[in-house]
Length: 430
Image 1 (cartoon, rainbow, N blue to C red):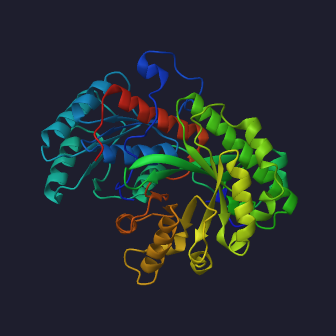
Image 2 (image 1 turned 90 degrees about the vertical axis):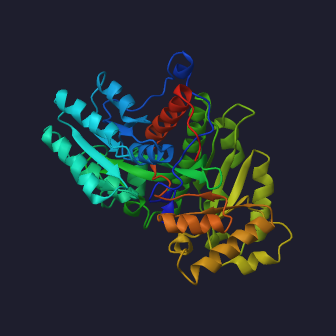
């Protein structure tokens, strides 16, 4: 099994904008859902007139273990500051600097001691002037963040301030030990509709929460794992994802979740029975995607067809994962047994400039569409690659540019926060 797995371990271009889910009960005046964000999570305020910027920052911050509140301007943020003081403030410097200057003056009067992160695409002189005003009021002013910025810049700020979850550490452990001690948990990475800029699903990835090392990536426990351990991990992934889907459904969130399972393991799992036991009991259930690595299934297309027909009875669909080299094997098929074709990240990276990668991506996308299937670009990390992949007609995208994997509770917190924003005031989709 590859380390990609349930198992895989920036600029705000396609940051999740309007999430197509129902507002949480409290937005309609009811009681809050039973599932909430983890206690004592640090809070960050984000003020920017551009919804896509606010949502991008929320996506990154939630993935790092930081709660957010979003505001369309400084006036709304200043009103919130009178009720609760955040651990960190992100504040845009718009064309009219008066709004952010008013915020800095107000922070000074409140003797706010927390860090203030200005961000803007304006010139250096303006940025220095506004930052200087904050310093005059004895505020903790961080170096101005120049737009456009990428995920790494935000993560670096959080690490420097020691906010959110600690960085994933390198360690070695036995998968059987991790399973026996119930250290395994599953994190969720958003899958975005690149045309509508909406959340359409999420993919699950395994992590180990070690009592000494903290969060450990799959590279620490996957190499050398026995077949029996991989089978246990796959069954745990399947049940965990279905249970997560049930939690999301109870919150009014219906997403099609994806999980990666090796072909030799999948053929042994009682998938239909597991799905019937744990799936959400609603007609709105979006179903489940099981990703199969190209190298394991491309020579077993007859088996893929049989699996696809069997699993479709319980609303489970197959995706051809890490696709890129096997397009010739699919070209002559009359029907494609996969609901999605997921482009290998090795071909997505630098597809905007690569003379080899771009044609391969375009061929894969055209092939998927020729069969009436969806194309998914995995590993989108650069804005230029996102623009290129969209221009090729790719349907969905995943990657750190669009959202990093996050624990289930953080993912729920993000969705509830986004739905709450929609409940308070409509936000236009860019």
